[in-house]
Image 1: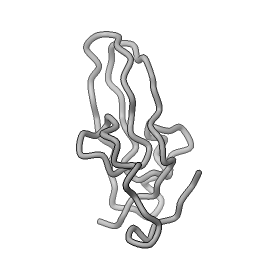
Image 2: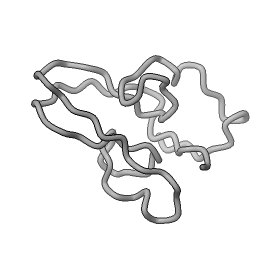
Image 3: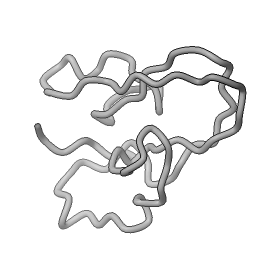
Image 4: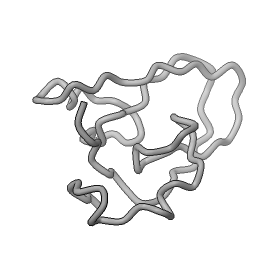
Length: 90
C-alpha cells in the first residue's frame, strides 16, 4: 500500500451524532475527514469504519498518519515533505 495524501496538516474538530462513519485513509476525499469513494480510483486504501456511541466533540485526523485513527494524535506537527514524498493538499 502506498503513502496516503495529506489532506491537511491540522486536525478537524467535530461533534458527531451517534452512528457509523467512514474515515478517509487515502487523503483524496473531498469530504474530509470522511470517505467519499475517491480511494477507488487507483489506490489500495479502504476507509476506516468507526462508530460514535454518544455525541461528543473530538478532533479527527486529516494528515492520515495518526496512530490513533480516526482521531488526531498530533502527528501532523512532525511530518516533513521530503521524508514523506507525498502530495500536500492544503
